[in-house]
Amino acid sequence: MTWDEVNGSEDMIEEDDWRLMGQEEDLCGVHLRLKPYLLGYPGYDHDHCEFCWQKIAAFDYPDAQREGYATDDNLRWVCQQCFEDFKEMFGWKVD
Ligand SMILES: [Zn+2]
Image (tube, rainbow, N blue to C red; front, side, top):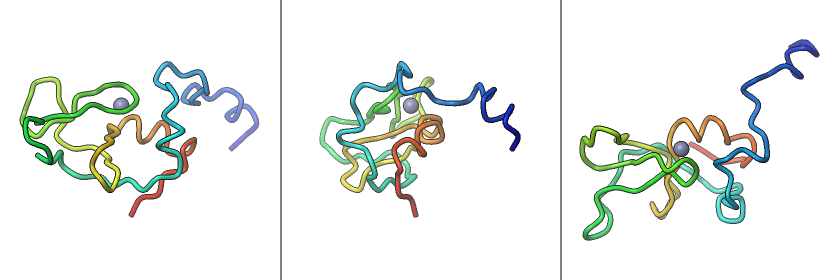
């Protein structure tokens, strides 16, 4: 990688990215696993990405994704796009 590529990268995630709202307190360095959304709790059939609020659902909603990255307790979900964008900043552990 050249110096220009390092400085000119438009994909660089900034620390003032609009999706960052203090999640680092709960999500820094945690273990995440890509899995289909689970019907874990009565009355819940979907959740939202912790960062961009992308809907992650157990059913084929038009605007929902069917799988995402979840913490071991399945309480926090991160969509695949945000996982790719923030994995280095947050240091997530994956299998
Ligand atoms: Zn997201």
